[in-house]
Amino acid sequence: QVQLVESGGGLVQAGGSLRLSCAASGRTCSSCAMGWFRQAPGVEREFVAAIRWSGGSTYYADSVKGRFTISRDTAKNTMYLQMNSLKPEDTAVYYCAARRTPIMVAASSGYDYWGQGTQVTVSS
Image (cartoon, rainbow, N blue to C red; front, side, top):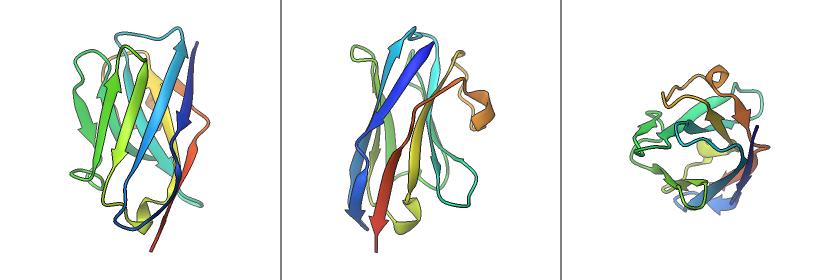
């Protein structure tokens, strides 16, 4: 089992920045992929970004490309999402997820472990 705990959410004005963290514990995996998803009220969970734990290759949704950066610190077993130039439409609960293979995918069904989520609210 892998436990994931997100932190770093909050309220920010449009154009501002936030950095989310996802701390992994338990049976962490060196050959896994991890990702960030988000879900606004009444909307399906949406892929944001993914990273291959070994090597650090990344993959982004078009809606955040150029504004968000996913990274990881293997020594700390922590993944990050740096969010810049935030827009009101980025408002959502953000979840981190992990899957037991190194292949990055955008489908939420492809992930085996999930955190509890952290709220990000961007005011206009």
